[in-house]
Image (cartoon, rainbow, N blue to C red; front, side, top):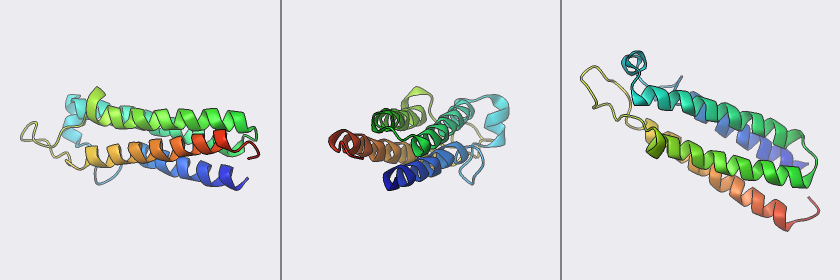
Length: 137
């Protein structure tokens, strides 16, 4: 029970941060880039979707009793964490604020979202191995 509660709360917090950070925080994508439809605006929208997915998986992880299903959800959360980092860097990417004169995007957005994705991936890869090893959880 304690594993489900701790990992579920951790995933929910990380998912909320992934969703909120590039959209509704001091590190958000600037309004000029959002109006112009630049790649950073699409990356912010994609990260919002990934963050919401992490929150939904966190809810499932918290309320599921079967160890095998929690193992699968933890593996999915780990892969979604990798996806969050890849969206920020490789798949779409954020601008660093130097794409044009009107852009005021924060260059630390990509670092923060990448770090959150990597932390999510590491925590839930560890949880996956923990659940696979311990048969009585």
